Image (cartoon, rainbow over all chains, first blue to last red; front, side):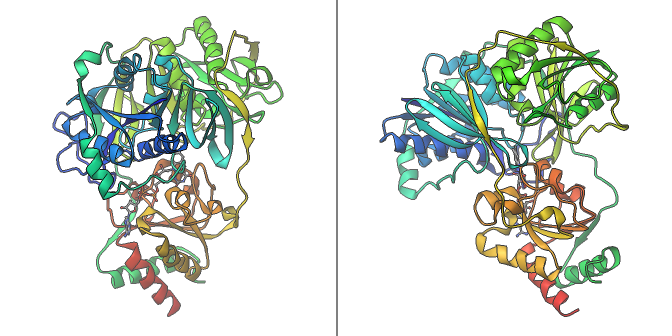
Length: 258
Length: 305
Ligand SMILES: Cc1cc2nc3c(=O)[nH]c(=O)nc-3n(C[C@H](O)[C@H](O)[C@H](O)COP(=O)(O)OP(=O)(O)OC[C@H]3O[C@@H](n4cnc5c(N)ncnc54)[C@H](O)[C@@H]3O)c2cc1C
């Protein structure tokens, strides 16, 4: 059995974002980078399947992006992935989800993966497209937004999260692709020995130009900061003072102390 | 400009989000036709053509079948835009259509500006304008971004639609929401804990602030997923929709799925150490502070009142 996990590296969402000089994306200098949260659930699920099947499946972790994304791949390898594939692309941020999915499909087509796991979306772009696009391009079933996953006899029973706490239980035969949602599992922390082991794992580098066969279908015309809503009060300062001010406001504007 | 709007049914009932696609079409001045896999018993109020496929036959969740049906309608109507909600149904179906149509897909549209679709990025700390380059574009709309100004009216002219549609994902059934320890929808004061509280031991700090204010403890999703707080206390799209007189968000960034559950609150206080956190957009008061320091200070001062 062969498993593919597609991951992305994203900035820490608590960063202070600035728009780049071209006005086309966020400025990437001075950002701390992480493995996309939703992808951590995908990596964890792959490792759990490997454990369930007695270590037989081989887990390939793939990431399209610039040099720094190797760090994200190494984290996934330290969590239990077997080998990494880095599709080198310094301009991945300019590519639309259709191009990214096409690049991955081009790689995956000849590899015949039985199970493909992705995050349901990335934290920076949030398009929630690449997983489904990839499955459609490969002609395999896709199940999105899963919060439950049980593999039995070559089929997966998955729970899809709908709105308002309702879930849909669905079943798909492998090969199939699943996009992973928060709460699917509890991603493990890489241990030090596993971080050391990950350094020795294979990390293949592929040039994006060799895999990109399509034109973009959409472009980012502009990136802006949201317009600030007027009216909200912002309080800053020392804790004791802040507490007094806030209590004063609550007394004046709400009925909680009456 | 012609838009094909995709309505949504859940357990036989039309979802209100269907009307948001209608509001969107009105806003951009597009002529609209509707499509839905649903039931004759609950039709949308709409003055136009509705292509209706039978949910009994095609299932409420059967993306390959729904894709096949939509492709039939698209071949007949030749729309410029196909419009869905950014929901568990919409974000699942939209990319499938995009591949079949070789169309651009734009997710979670909140506005249209200079012919480009505006979408959030980085947890709504940024906005991106996306320009499609394909003949047809498939868009999904952020929940609540487009609302109808008046009550929708009219009776649709129903045209039944059928297609050869084989599914490769089998729908087994629905699993209802778990019943939990509280009903937050009745609470007048809610103090919610977010991931910013750091660790489960700190839940008690937020809970004691809730008690001091005479309210209930709420939580954002990561806190619930991690098992620190019961699911019934989760506020948001996949949790509770609440409308307290006072909502205090502690260490919560303000992701759209969280805001969707609490935006009907009367007065909103956010305590966050990040001055740029998107929760600031909806807060009446944003206190820039470490909540683990501020909350105990508040509790002490409230007790002394
Ligand atoms: C389909 C879908 C459905 C979802 N449904 C829901 C839902 O129903 N409800 C929900 O809440 N989320 C939901 N989410 C998740 C949502 O997108 C966010 O991931 C989540 O709301 C983030 O929770 P948070 O704000 O607690 O954490 P984070 O986004 O991690 O934010 C933590 C915040 O705490 C602040 N902070 C850190 N330390 C401190 C400190 N010491 N003092 C003060 N502030 C501090 C940080 O500045 C940051 O702003 C859903 C997501 C998806 C994709």
